[in-house]
Image (cartoon, rainbow, N blue to C red; front, side, top):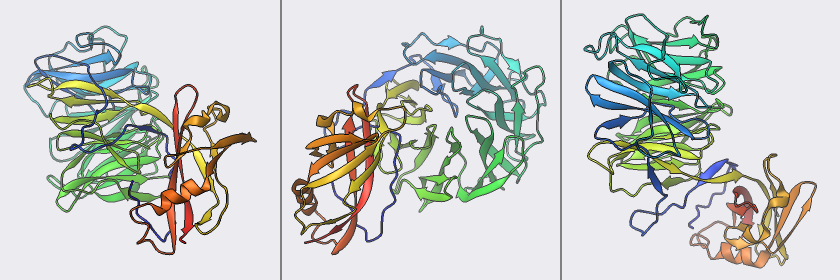
Length: 465
């Protein structure tokens, strides 16, 4: 693996991620298994937040004609044909989002005037256990109420609303924790067009996109409390869709760079802004997982994920795959594809779980002239895991196996042969061109006895011979 050396210390991201081996199209790669969820002679569509937290349930809509869309839910363990019809009213019923437990959905519908595709949408909610047609209407204002999102706890919904399809968009919010007394805070109005709200799972905050359009691409991303207070501009230069992680810590967005869309992540907690992609194709945002560590997007008909350090391609490039959505715990991705064409069905990929490990590599400065015996990696797992369950035979540092280990005060100490690690470093392609002192990030991987993978990184300074 080629490394890029830097004289500056590299910040370490300890990620809760799900790993899939990444290889280029030109290699004979076995891509992740893709499961088909729907199979019909029509086009299926996905809203913004379509998976329950654990990925066990998905909501989508099927287009039977220009003025006939119906909403469905299904378990991702089920087979095509086992989806449950939720709406029976005429018109365009779509744009559905689902709660973390999978028990409630929100969607928009123009059923009052199906012949008017833009100016008569209203917002509806319903329980997924209810009979088809049991939805409850939330708005009745004869406006374009569109693209709703619902908080993970099911208490807050947000959508954009306008008297016409191009001007006057505001962000509207409803507190539906008490369906008998629904509360509507004042609309959020920043500029002429405020669109595409994305809500945190606890419903306390939301982000949205604002611009003076139409047809513009240089909008701003704002965050605001769901009651309308605390409005704050986060970043400029965004284009349309944004996605807020469930914990409210990060925002994924797309913006035009050099004539094409690239994917960025804004870290709200640390006030940092990072570009994830840089290529000559359009990267179209799909979503972000619950803790903001995995971003999904599509490019040139393929599905990708990014764990904030590296990109992984999930599909094989032979079809048009788009609209990738990821569940809260990052274990399931669903997307649209014409791989069983010519119409678009819903497909899913289940990712292999990999937990985040906190890693401290010792020594902090590695002098390649020294003759020490060991490199030590101090490994700490999240509190719900036990370091005593680490399988020594599966612990590696950049591919080099651990020689032995011990546990002290809840910390797993893995010992690696120093000569082997140093040999690995000096055999790197960029070693000869590196400066006398350089920083390098080492990756420690391993496995628990139950098969759960873990990974962590640490950056040390190397002194060349």
